[in-house]
Image 1 (tube, helix red, strand yellow):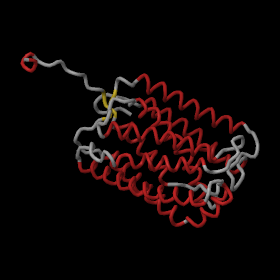
Image 2 (cartoon, rainbow, N blue to C red; image 1 turned 135 degrees about the vertical axis):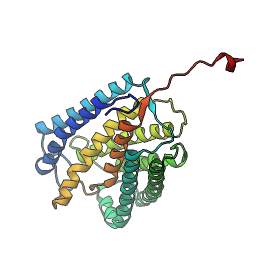
Image 3 (tube, helix red, strand yellow; image 1 turned 180 degrees about the vertical axis):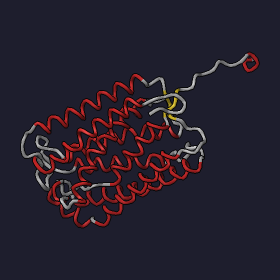
Image 4 (cartoon, rainbow, N blue to C red; image 1 turned 90 degrees about the vertical axis):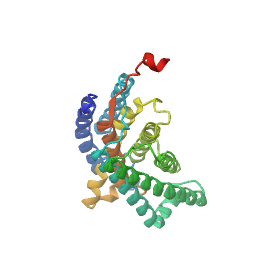
Length: 294
């Protein structure tokens, strides 16, 4: 996509679309054919497993290279103006996080029962993680809603310095909770893609928080492209097949502690909206005039 000021991520966006078109049918087929219901483990080695891993690895390498190549050419635009697509994406992310937090709370009893089977940490530790995760989820939802209002009203999106860290901490707690689950690292399928997705989201949203609030804005903005596109790809791989299985009555096909989480989609949508509409050519530092230098 071409930014109106001249910076383009068209190649990256087209590459994402092509990979998604290939990856989603493959991933959906795996749930019906080679993934064990309830555990999310692979039951056998097939070509589709290798193909999916190759697609994800190739995508990461491509976006890493593109991020490094374009690192000195762009910056995150923070000027005061209405931003329709980022505003809508922030609202979707906020609603997604709120729905995720509500469903976590509503199904806490079911999750606790499943936890007893799949975790090895003490139950009180699980409860503490749950409370912390819910608290940061609510703060993250508030942040995205405030950000949506800011974008849609045309205000300057550089406020909320502390609040901008809420999504990062929420994602970190979610990631930690995933590592408490007892899994087979040889046969792992479902949980691995969630862990990779959350890792990419953490790096992207930390970098976004720094750039958007102008706190060390020059620190590694290449990560917006690398982990924005890679995170979005993994978000689609995790969310879309599960959503299809859920609405068709086959939600038992994936891991018992997982679900079609709207937050995964919302965060992917926001990341894409950011990298496709808010990256602009980096401003050149103009030399001071003779009058100013005196």
